[in-house]
Image (cartoon, rainbow, N blue to C red; front, side, top):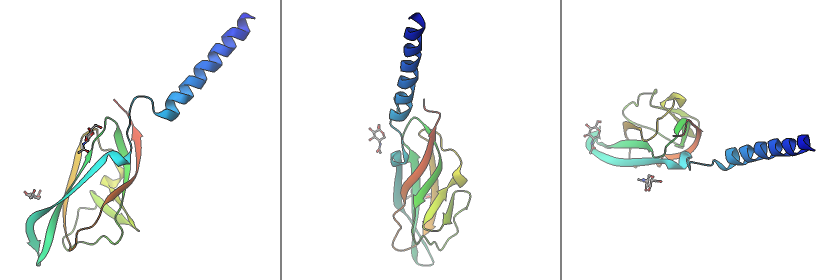
Length: 128
Ligand SMILES: *[C@@H]1O[C@H](CO)[C@@H](O)[C@H](O)[C@H]1NC(C)=O
Ligand SMILES: *[C@@H]1O[C@H](CO)[C@@H](O)[C@H](O)[C@H]1NC(C)=O
């Protein structure tokens, strides 16, 4: 009888752990918490406006493998591929490396009109 009780206690414990993991428990973090800001830098490159982009991880978890939808992305000035690299219709941010909580990434590009850069994927870890 006692073993039965212990067994069901252990089963319940495992079940709650699974529920906590699935529901995410204590944080509310995803790629949608990456804030993208695009503003005119005030400069022109070969007569084409330059844009400053900043991306901020606005949550308490580390986000890696960040991908942005960036269909058709082009620029008249090169962007450091270790910051943004195009792969098909998507762009990889910082080579998939981790972006710490509340850390940001900045780059500039030149095109007219500017592109809509939309986070579509990340891997969440190390929530604080
Ligand atoms: C755009 O970025 C450049 C390079 O980081 C910086 O010098 C400039 O002040 C920025 N412009 C604006 C309007 O924030
Ligand atoms: C960043 O996240 C906080 C907490 O979720 C939220 O209140 C705030 O509006 C976010 N900032 C922006 C610029 O979206």
